[in-house]
Length: 80
Image 1 (cartoon, rainbow, N blue to C red):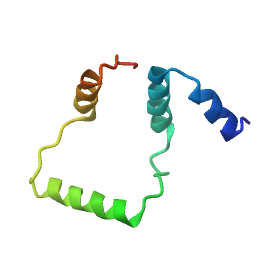
Image 2: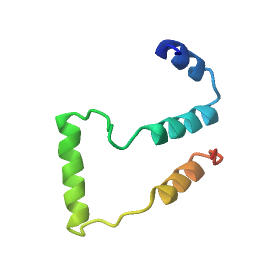
Image 3: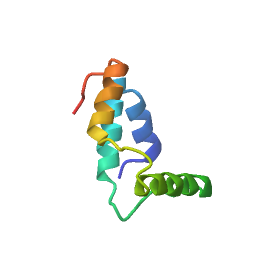
Image 4: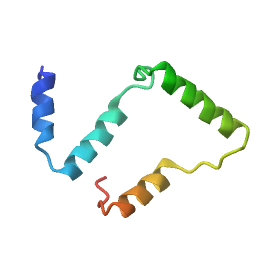
């Protein structure tokens, strides 16, 4: 099995576009039942934002819309 440090070193040598694509692919490969460990501060912020959504105080957008806007803003070609 590959060593984490070797994989990280190899991945660091990829182009920015390929690193972003790798990040997306790795994030998508994490099972839903294995969320990352979050600090108490992040959990508090997530709860606050979730409560705002539930109360109808904010309007949400889909990730694809947000991602497209960010890519356009920063001149990144879609790497999907």
